[in-house]
Image (cartoon, rainbow, N blue to C red; front, side):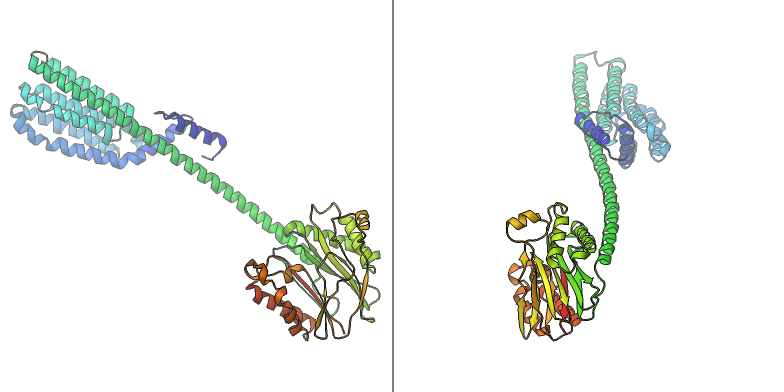
Length: 483
C-alpha cells in the first residue's frame, strides 16, 4: 500500500474511532496480522487445555467414581479430539479465515463437556465439584487463546446459558434453599467472570488493533520516506549531472593555459562551479595582452551563470578591449539588473610587453600586487564601485566613474592578480588567522621562482596554512613575470 493523503487519513480515522472493525480494506490486513501474531499463543493455549483436560481425568476417580467411565468418554473421546483437530488446524494456512470459529467451538465443547459431566454425575455434590472447571474455560477463552471479543463473548455466554439449563433441569438447583443459594452464588461468579472477561478481552483486542494501526502507519510512513529518499537521490543525481555539466562549461570558459610562458594561472573553486573568473584577451599587436579577473558575490551555480554572462559580454566588447575603463563600463551596463542581487568585483589591465607598462581599471576588486626588489606594492589606482550595483548615471553622480591608471613594471618584477579567497582563507574559519597575515613574507620568499612555480608554491603554502583544501571561498591566482 503506497502512502497517500487519503491512506493516512483512513488510518488516523480508524485510530480515532477505536472500533472492533476497521473500514476501507484495513480489516482484512488486520485479521491476517492478528492470525500470524497469535499462532504461537493459540498453540500453547490449546496444548495447555489438552494437558489440563486430560490430567483432571485423575480427579474423576475420586469425585465421580460411579460415572467416571462416561466422564472419561466425554474427556478423551469427545473434547480432547476436538482440541487436537483445532490444534492441527493452526498448522494449515487454509484454515486461517475459520480459525476463530474453530477456537470458539473448542471453547464451547470444553464448557459443554464440563456441563455434561455435571449433569451425569450421580449425585449433586459430586457435580458441584465440576463448576470450578467452567471458570477455567471462561478465563482461557477471554484471555489466553486469542479469541477476538465477539467470538469469546458469544462462546462464554453460551457456556453460562448451558450451565443455567443444566443446573435447573438436571441438577434441580431450585428444589431447596441450600441448592438455590449455591445456584445464585455460582451465577454471581460466572456472570462476574464473564463481565470481567469481556472487559479484558475488549481492551486486549482494541490494543491489538491500535498497535496494528500504529505499525501500519509507521510502515506507510517508512515507505513514503523511502519513496522521497529515492526521489531525492534521483534529484541529486540530476543536480550532480547538471553541476558536472556546468563545471565542464565553466572549465571551457576559463583558459586552460596562458597565451605566453611568462604568465601562469590557478583556479580552485570552493564548489564544483564557482564565481571566480579570469580570461586573457589577445591583440593584433603581439606585444599586448589583456588580463581580466573577476569575483561574483555568492557561490555555486548562480555565480557560475553570471561568470558565463561575463565571458559572453567580454567576447562582444572587442572594441573596448584596449580601454579597461570602457570595458568595465560596458560590463556594468550589461549586468545591471541581470544578476539577481549579486554584484561583481573585476580588474582588467592591458600589459604592453615592449613598454613594460600596464593600463588598468578596477571595479571594487582586491588590489593586484606588484612584487619588485623585495617590496610588495598595491596597484590601488583607478578604483571604483563593483559591477551590477549602480547604473552609469548613478556612478557619475557619485563622481566615481571607471577610469584608467597606468603603471610601469620594472624588469624582474612580478604582477600578482588574485581574488579575495586567497587572502581571506583561514584555518577553522578563524578570521584572526587569515592567510593575509602571513602572505607578505611567503610571497617575498617565493618571488625568485618562475611564475608557474611561484603560483604552485603560493598555493601549497595556503593549503598548509589552512590545514587542507576546504576553503570558504574560491581561489584564483594569475602571475606574470615581467621580463
